Image (cartoon, rainbow, N blue to C red; front, top):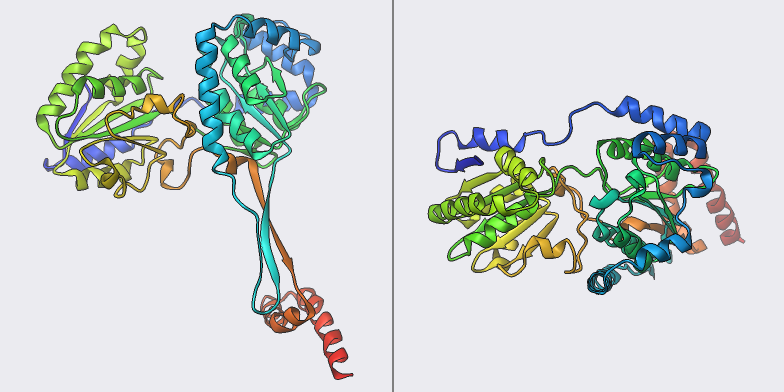
Length: 437
């Protein structure tokens, strides 16, 4: 049975706090194992990758086999059905169009003192994208990670995807082609993250690593951060639905189950002001769950982490939503735009009954790589900005330096940094001497 809460109950706050604090990630301590893997890859390079791939993915490789060849890619992508190819192409086009609008502009201006100031944006030179592998691989994640990087202008895109037993989903390779990926390697786990961060004899190091993975991949991303940039440490997925009025309970149930079938640790939450709707949705979940191929996974998620909350009104529902800060937020209410203005912390918001979160996973356009575990309070989903760097620009005329340099000298002295002050004062002295001539 899912967790059931009502904001009018005297023990609601305790129950809500317990729900928020539930640990849904794998609690196993993998840091020592990951540290050893990273050290091995740094020391032995390709040889370590081959040994670890044989150990974890049951696949014997030589260094020359780490990268998919153009012939292999062509053969695999030729297996994709025309309908699947068309769907993937539509998704790629929509994702590319959306992210192209995110590109920021360079800026430059001259202030009243005569200083020319501004900034410019430039892409990272190389990005590495991690893709979970095997038949459970997600080609949509390839598009969501690679297309923003390419739109940002990243010159070199690398994908690492494990192929347990040598099995690869051809849609993953096709998605990489559509997104403009340059190199695809058949390795996974912490060893793939290490290879992209530090480089091997075959794989050149990158500047930023993005993409989801298991606990070992997440731990590896934490450990290589600083050597390279990373996008985020993503936890189990989650959806929050706020529903009111004459909504279809079957649709809501399917939206909840769509999240639950991701992972037994995923979380699906419904907040509604209507007791009858809450009961109807719960009954619909019970009826629809056994029909799913992934019923065991979805059932475990709904049983352990599913939650239904009865709120007094939509304003209270919005306040609860901000405390949850969900990855995905569906607003199935009469005026979703108005309610959205009251919701400040969410990775992505889906407005209205005809905008299910599932469409956002594939073709609506916005990125589906989003902050989880309440991190939407302070972070955003993946975008072109993750692959760009902002460089500030300044040029002072002699007059501008005279106008503002004295303050710099004073501040340097207050911080005890003599050379800082002298660096500015020496120029001011020369300008003053010229002014006295």
